Image (tube, rainbow, N blue to C red; front, side, top):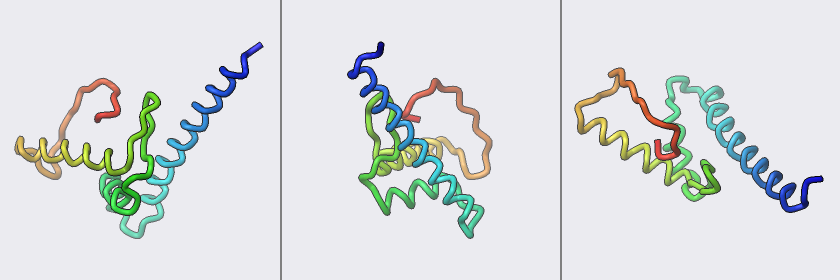
Length: 102
């Protein structure tokens, strides 16, 4: 028999997964319904960061990241690539482990 504590922990984790999935689904849904089909996921993220900067955008290893946090990280990477001469339209390959920071 599974203890009540383990059941509660499992339910909490499942709720976090549902919220994360709903957020990601919402961003892609917005892209799909958008009149401007050329809008990138980055543009949607930036727009959401302006509308709801302190709302949870991502949950990873029990740590919560707001739209502001994720947008700021995306902008840091963008500026790094621009400083290295990479511009819109260039093809870039990234080999990285799976981490929330990127």
